Image (cartoon, rainbow, N blue to C red; front, side, top):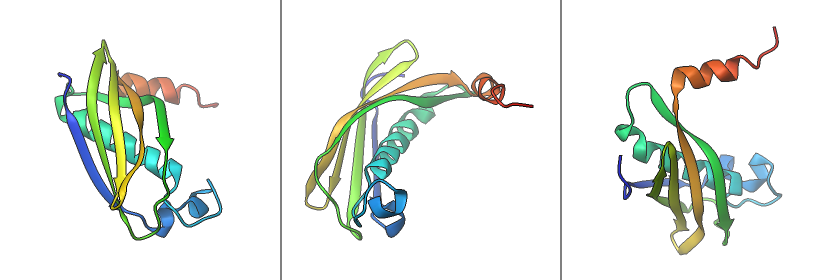
Length: 128
């Protein structure tokens, strides 16, 4: 895997993605948690083809500014670029825009994990 891998996704802002619906506010605009989920999905999907069998990435850090509101019905676009690889830690630049311009930007970090070991570690937390 090398730096420079780019991701791109587009979604329509539907009522289920509104701040009012996800609990992050009281208005019908694109929710910040929905924007973060879009960034994570764009980033992980962009590098997935470069991973070894049995590997996946998990989000470990996100530093995003949500700078402008987007009403229901507009299309939101997310672009990510892998800018740094430090062992198993991947760092992405992220930009999110609607049809009128940029609505958010920042960085997102993901970590490459062995899916089976990671799932087993998570499952071991369950009480019996």
